Each structure stands twice: as C-alpha cells, then as structure tokens.
Image (cartoon, rainbow over the protein chains, first blue to last red):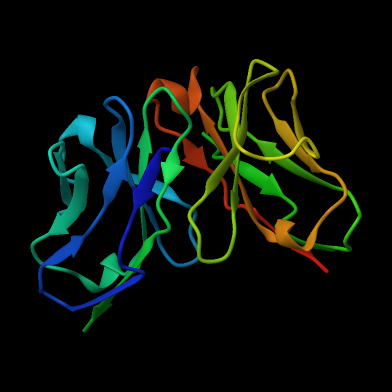
Length: 107
Length: 116
C-alpha cells in the first residue's frame, strides 16, 4: 500500500538552529514528492515539490530513492517557520499525506 | 483571482443526519478534490471531480457522494452521519488533471464538521 511516514509529531528547535523534518515513503513506481505547510489560521499550501528542485523560504528537500526519503531541511530556523508540515506523494494517484510534523521554533 | 472557498466553516450535526458541504474552485480550475482530515491525521483523499464526472475515489463508503456543477463548483454530501465522520473537510482545486497529473492543488480553509 502507498504510505507516507513522518516519524516526528513535534519538533522543537531554537531560532537559528538547523531544521530537518523527516519523511519516508512506500510507493510503487516513481512518485512525485511534495511538502505542504499550514501556518496558524491559514490554509494548507504547497511549500515545495521535488520535481522543481527549488528552495522556498530557505527550505530544500532532497529525494533519496535508495532510502525512499524526502527530508525537508533548512540551515537556520526562523520563528515564522513555526507551522504544521505535511509530506505527500503522488504517482498518477491521489495525493497520499503523512500525519504531519508540528515545527516549533523557539526564540 | 479568487482562491478556493468553502462553506460552511463550522457545523454540528446529529448522528444519522445528512450534511452538504460546498466548495467554489479557484478561477480557471476545472478539477476539484475532497479530503477528510481527522484530528491528528493528514488529509485523506475522498474523491475527485473533473468536468462534472467523478474520476477517482478513495477508500470511503458510498454514503460519501459528491457533485460538480458546470461552473466547476462542487458539493460533498454525507448521509447517515456517524461519530467518526467528525473531521475537517478540505476542498482543493487544480488545473486540468488534478492530483493525478502532477499539477499543484490549492486548498480551501475547510469545513469543520462535528457529529454528536
């Protein structure tokens, strides 16, 4: 079955510290991978997708097919990064989301 | 350009009742999908509509049904409500093809349904 796993429910880091939000997937074929973010009182929105290979708000994510991982990273966390982050996968199928990780950046 | 809008934002229903949730897609988008997000979970795909036809369905029973209208707005109907149906229901729209095609999908703010 297609599955996306985010092992951490909550991740707390200090402002300026590096951040890594983990995501592993189990998917047949070659899925496309996404990170969605939900800031407080805002709607769920796309942060980045692996096919774009771009950095958004300082975040990057590398697809590791051998480890079936798509971890989200940022070298220096900012307070405004505090939000709920969801990893998702799709491969000619509906998006499958992980359960999400709440990132809390402490000043 | 207006984004995805959903109504109502909150509602409370009694077990066994029926509910209709509404969604207006983003301008220029002809594909609408619905997701259920239970507390502490990620969104789960319910179904997708493309040009007024259902063209994909997740693991939800038939009492979850939907419609898409010629203006691409959509409804989600749930019959015989159960306590476990309590969740945030998200509507998302996308350009032609929807989530199956790799297009980015754009979410509404959701409708909170509480079944008592």
